[in-house]
Length: 206
Image (tube, rainbow, N blue to C red):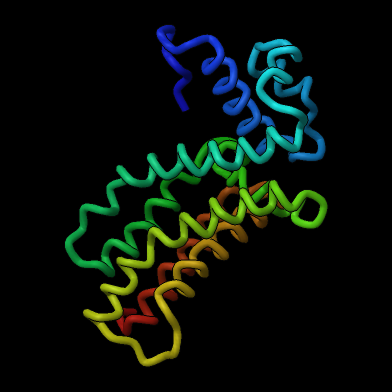
């Protein structure tokens, strides 16, 4: 993500740099292993600047989850899968798009909020809730297209647009875990291939 321009106020710039650094360092090392010093070093700011913006590491975790939700929402809002006229094509193109951005180092394509939720779900409810808001909020953006596809194609099974939207995130997050466990991004792409086939069969298209 781009950093603020030189015209941004210094206070806002430092905070944004800390959030960007937290986003990347936590994805690479995990929340527990990430220290305030790690984030400050990556952001090139002092600890004094850190504690000016965040009370502690947990407060940074909450803010990082919110920052992730904000920046990724903007990213997905302009993604090309929205351009398809057919709603089912949009849903399938979303899956294809998620597959296309699985590239580079493992940490660079995995999900910040998924990573943190797995680590802190029982020990830091504030971070967990911020992560959940991000994940479920993103899933909800798929519901309108899935509902439109149900109306157009019909289905024989008892499920909802919301449940399928959540299932897409289950597969995506699970794919990230397998990619990490196997040290192989292809495992995450494979999971999305299966998801695409599954969705087509739900709508009797496969």
